[in-house]
Image (cartoon, rainbow, N blue to C red; front, side, top):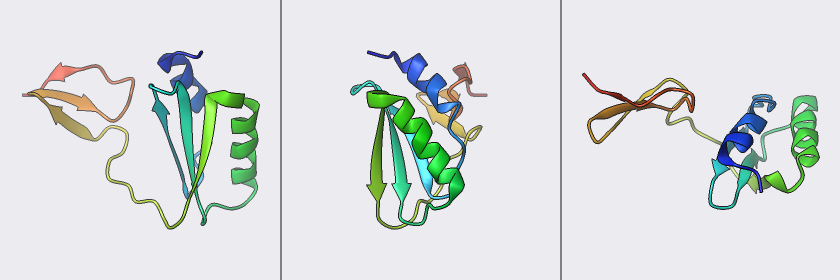
Length: 96
């Protein structure tokens, strides 16, 4: 069973394809790759091949509609007086 760190490392090989998103489901020990109806083309084909190569470590979910960004890597998140980021490599630090 892959660890959360191994799953996060797996997403480093994922190309950013419009109409797709992914996150690490730590409870299921899987990366969840969401693919909308609007995602198409060779880059999507390559991303799906990468997901298939990872086997059960990646679960692909098809979504109707479009995706909307609410937060992006580097955006500030305040949690209990601490500033954290959407970037998983960013360390927890106290907000000033």
